[in-house]
Length: 144
Image (tube, rainbow, N blue to C red; front, side, top):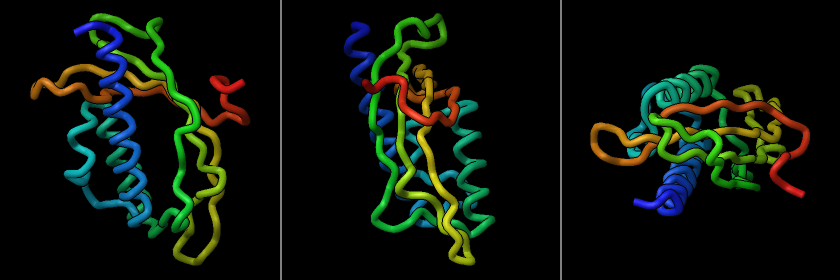
């Protein structure tokens, strides 16, 4: 498989994961990792996502309806490739208009998340996100 094909597969996997993640957050998180996101994530990333879903569920937060976050920029970053990393993407997602609503109706504002995502093949042979690094930024460095 060429690097361009791996990059395209990584983008497809991430976009599918992101869509499923938004559904889980809109529903108020989860006590355990939903089956709908398992095809896309593994390793430390899976543990981090599950912990986030559990926190949202425990606190009874929900994303504002009809205002999900969106991916505003995404591109491969070959400088992040290694023996373990078959594909890597850098992305910006914008949740400024979507924030969480607490159980008391208070709005917790969102922001712009700039992330590096690392992909490898799992034991099932599927390309999955296994790790990430992210930070909240005031503007997406990929745009412009």
